[in-house]
Amino acid sequence: MSEEVARVATCPVHEINPMHPEVLKSPWMMNRRLRKEAPVFQDPNSGIFFISRYEDVVKMAMDHETFSSRMLTPSRALTATADKEIQEVVESGYPNVPTMLTEDPPAQRRYRKFVDGAFSPKALKALEPYIESLSNELIDNFIDDGKCEFLSDFGVPLPLRVIVSQLGAPEEDLPLFRKWTDAFIGNLSQQLDRDGLLQAAKDMVEFQHYFVERMEERRAEPQDDILSKVVNASFDGEKPLDNAECLSMLSQILVAGNETTSATLTEGIWLLIQNPDQYELIKNDPSEDMISRFVEESLRYSSPSSNMFRRTTKDVEMHGITIPENSVLFARFASANQDSERFPEPEKFNLMRDNLREQVAFGKGVHHCLGAALSRREMNVGFKVIFERMENFRLQEGASEPQFSANALLHGLTGLDLAFDKVG
Ligand code: HEM
Image 1 (cartoon, rainbow, N blue to C red):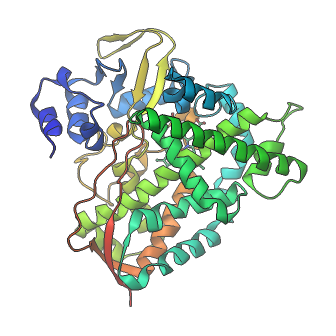
Image 2 (image 1 turned 135 degrees about the horizontal axis):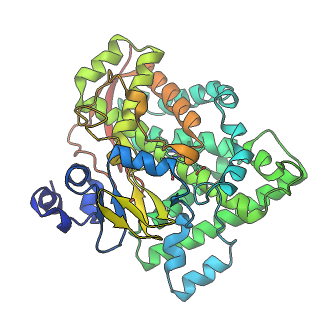
């Protein structure tokens, strides 16, 4: 345990520094204390209000009139910088306009209309054979070694390749997508130095120009992919989306869709290593129902979209504290998922919980995750194939314990050096 995390356990609650990198990596002690002692906690450095209890987080998510999402989160770090060179790079791209995640109803609902159909459970059923064969192909690459770095060998490429195929881009461009996702995440992390921000700006603008070309192609010749649906959709005689709107939506789909699913896939396996009794349950009954339980409990436990921004549209009273109009808040989905009032013994990884599906890893209300059905399908199919072919999961000999990244919005392991046996 780092010195800072140890301090969180004993210091007065108002002295907790919630944005300290060590606390971001290991937020559980802080979450416990905030839920109990300071359910509305204002970070003195950033001014952000941290809302940590399940009931309050759900209330926020359901009341979009009071808790607005309109604040251009994905480019906050870049737009906030006064650095001339970075600004020039940003200006050579397209403006970052608010769309789904960063917009409120009714505009947010309009943007969702363009893509909801493409991400419905029915539309995604057709993707199942592709997800299954891709999972097998990824496992083929390392199965004979008896070991892999699970995050980069399986956790990252599975959702990345699915979304790249759905965005109509060729496989050889995969490394570009990895680079762009890293740039968006790095920018969000609020941890980049000046050179890091400059590189992120260049990469994000490269992403924009790449997609404007692809969009022109799909306007001229629509194909059976999400990109064609997004650029050509038009409802009730409305004009189709312009380039800046499409780019904003595509970047959200790319970022929200990759890191999160990769994180839960990877943490799921780490949780099985740490909880052999729960792994036994799956080994004895690798049914669809049990794997689905494993996916839901891994979502609750990992909650990779740990905090999401909101802004108050009026003064709000919560637990005796007045949160002024225009304050920035974190709806703390990860903390909500560990609230003992909702999930008894929340630290226990327990596939047999009777309220597994009350977990809020995908959020709630109008912004409920666009990709929830896709992500669930990727994880249910991906884990099914894993359990068919691999068993006895453990850390590689001499490997150190996996570590979490320091990011205020996205929580996940930085890698998992996995050893396993081949089934059969
Ligand atoms: C384990 C995987 C995932 C997790 C934990 C997750 C989590 C979330 C959460 C918590 C929200 C709500 C945000 C808010 O209330 O402000 C959200 C929204 C969103 N997610 Fe996901 N997500 C996952 C996978 C995906 C995938 C695969 C996609 C893309 C296809 C995706 C695209 C989006 C988009 C576009 C939104 C914004 C929706 C809106 O505001 O209308 N997510 N996600």
